[in-house]
Image 1 (spheres, one colour):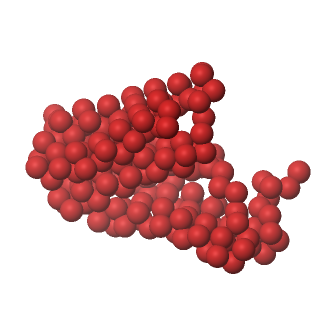
Image 2 (cartoon, one colour):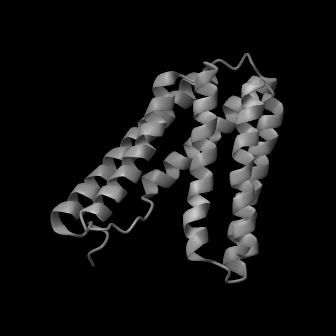
Length: 184
């Protein structure tokens, strides 16, 4: 166990706190915890890279912490009807689809190397901006009605595009034993 992994575990422990704050209607505090988790993500990554403290555990925990926080915020806001249910289902389903495909490839003895696609990175940034923006809007700017509409459309488009490209990569891997990025 090293410092970056401890920080990442701290970020995971912030997930139930964030959910509780959202459900309690404390959107301003939820936004601040969300920002703390984001800063923690940057700090643990910096320390791991700068001081050669990258670990295999950290490689799994870091994206897990990101996804747990994001999906939890989407589900919590959806539960409170502060985010469209269709978008919550879309965001959560994409992640379940990806995890399911990876597990299935392992079961079928064709493990796939998980590497984020550029569209996935853009999608994650959009999801983060939308989640944080929704929390901030609910806390301080409740009359910004354009933000949920535009944010939902952008996140939906990027989520669908990302899921489709991952599915294509997975199908190619399962058919050939390698994805297009695994070949020279």
